[in-house]
Length: 257
Ligand code: 1GP
Image (cartoon, rainbow, N blue to C red; front, top):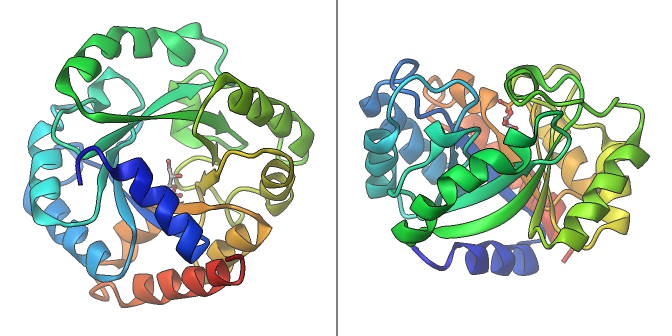
């Protein structure tokens, strides 16, 4: 898969209308490698399109986890780094992210500059992605010193999404924060951004059931990310619930093709 992840994503969006990504936390302090590999296989079997690997609070090297996950599955593994601690050579690709609504330039371009030489020399496929944090923002907002967009101000998010498009980002990630309550990113925000912005929208944070996932796709999101749902349910039901959610997402996506 290495070197072809962006093509894989855009081909899928063209033929299927929407994608489902599963977010796994690679931190050795929170998950054993055997467990994360088992979860990775379950999400692959449930039909998710890619595995994102990352988290806001990482306390150890993620290399072993990333390598083990990448070796265990055939779908793409994509790094989702919140900081330098989230960089590894062992994934198929990485989202090279900028937290555009941070108050601290470190999270907009500083960390990226520190990581750039390592990323370039490693040859890992890099996909530039604007990261926009919407209330409540949770740990990602606290760590990234974000000035979160209010949930009832979609136009503010659109301003930044359009700037991201003109700056050349390939994806715009609308993030409510892992574990956000209230059914994910507000549909009005997804809808306004996807209506006026030509860059695919990826949305995550609080999408905990099929209803909110389908609503996200119907509002215009190209990709929905689930993390907390997977952490809580996938091992318990062997991925049956996730399979139903992915099927519902694909049915909603098919209507857009
Ligand atoms: C977090 O958007 C992701 O970065 C996933 O959020 O854990 O709430 O699914 P959840």
